Structures are given as C-alpha cells and as structure tokens.
Image (cartoon, rainbow, N blue to C red; front, top):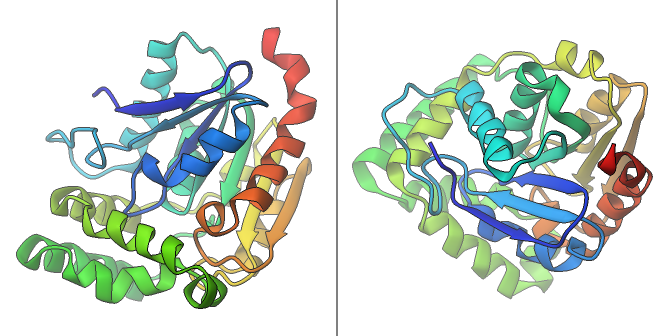
Length: 261
C-alpha cells in the first residue's frame, strides 16, 4: 500500500496524519507555515484523497504500518509523528507498533480512551448510511462537530472548505475508517511507555475531544506539553493554523539537534 503524500520543506521529518473524513489537503497551512522549520510530510491515509483502500479488514494498526512503510520509502529512520483526531488514533497505533521510529509525538484534538458502546454503535450507523446513501450523513451528522462556533460565526471560507473536503470523502473509506476507529484499544499504557517528548494540542472549543481529554493524555507522559488553542474547535490546525504552527515549531526546535544523529 503506497500512500499518496504531499510534502514541503527540508530537515527534521514531521509526519502529520489527517482527521476523519478529510485528507492531507487539510494540512495546507502546515505545509506552508512549517516548511521553514522542518520537512512536513502529509500522507493521505488509506482510502482517502489519492490513496487506495485495498481489501484488508478495517484496522488502525494497518494504517500505522502504512505510515512506517512510507518512512521506509522516503529513507527516513526516525521522525516526529503526529495526527489530529483519527490521525491521532493512527499515531497512537504507530507508537505501539513502531516506537523505535519516533523522535517525538504530536496528538491534536484526539483521545486515548476507547469508544464507549454508544459511540461504537454510532460509527456503525454512519458507516452503513454512507455506503447506502452517500455523503449526506457526513454533512448532517459529522461536519457540525468538526468546527468550533467561532469559526462558524467568523470564518465562513474555512467552514466551506471543510464542508467540501467532507463531501468528497469516498464512502468506502469512510465506512472502513469508522469500523477501524470503533475497535481501537485504550492507549493510555502506550502513552505511558513513550520514551520521546509529546505535544498535545486541543482547540478550546473542541466538543468531540475536549480539553479534558487532552489534559489526560498529557498527564500520562512525563515529558509532555499541552497547548490549548483559543477560538478553535475540533480542527484546530485548520481553524487557527498560526497558533497550531507556533506550537509545533516550539516543540520541534529542541529536537532538531537529534535529527542528524
């Protein structure tokens, strides 16, 4: 499985994994804003954007292994690996399966706990609806939670861009990813075992994975920092890219010395 990837910049490799049900297009402002500080690598996770879905059973571990293979293809031994929302779940799976490939970890607007049964059932409902009726259920049921009230009120273009990305999500990938996320394990032990620094970022207005979830993740890792981004909801990197990029730049600065070891 070769992932379609957009990259920018040079130096320390920073892999950013996108949210559900978007693609690497969501990281445009990160590729532009971080390229002066590091090498930004933003793949489309399997089934989304330009990446094929394949025939495998739904699995976040598989998505994490896709990312490890991407590093192999790029000739990268170790990288900072991070993700937002679903990308965060894939990042935690990567931490579990490929801990020796990490220089640092970024978890944005995500959570380490598993889905409770009602959330699992809701994922299956959306998976079935999107397979039978297309993206309408995403616009009605998923899109409203992705964006914070400040963005909805003041940044109509950002909201419109996110809506477009949501509408273009392939139904097969949407259902596959929902089923993969529904069975994810608790990842607090994984975070507790991290041997590298962790940056946790969360939008102040995120209702899907609120600041309390971010605080719990940061609390599980001794070498962690927490950034709460004002006026941002669940897609903090898209809603307030300058603040998000500043947090990442500050985080990767001390890691640059280890990039050439």
